[in-house]
Image (tube, rainbow, N blue to C red; front, side, top):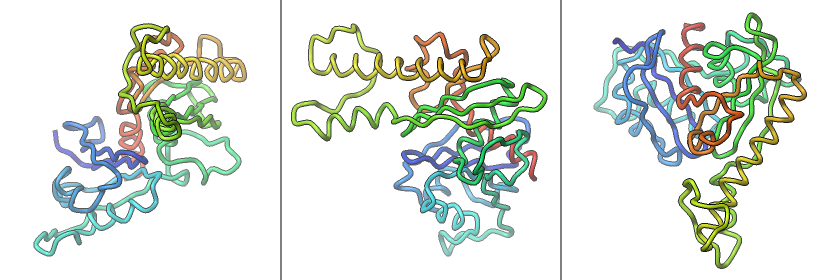
Length: 262
């Protein structure tokens, strides 16, 4: 399959990249730590920019955008010459997203959240909630029905890893933990107790927020709940409230928006 677009999703921790056609993602998703993002790192991960007709970018880290601009322009290395720089489009509310926006200040909506909403509208319809487990966990709400889906707003809460890192950093005796499914709710060690608090407690947070959103939307069983992001599978596996896990929803949303705007 020929790759027309390069999709780039810059989050606080990692940058995800994928090539795509208009119809689907092509090949594996690559990840680069965002603090190490440079034009050279992008070239190593995605190949020369001349291989794509356009780059579709979502970023919540303004300082990292310069690396993508440099990559697209071909200025990363003197020996690297391209005949034509690809078009670079930054996702924003001003583009044709395929959804409406019912929000007082649309310019303040994170680009990744708009990509998630655009992807959810196509794959799952509305009403829907996208739960994105990243550095922060975000809940993005789509209303308006399947024919006229619209972004309504959402919820932002601390991310799972951020919460556990805070405990480690702010206490003398609590260790840094690797997140996984706890064996029991009753921890028999400090590590086990922290795992139980993190995983079970976080599921409780997600469950309560979803309950409140379902009540306000008056959607009942019609509400689709989609999880994405790094810890989506871990948290969703024992949360019946989450009906779908879509690991690459943000990139799929970028692909859909690219197809509507190029």
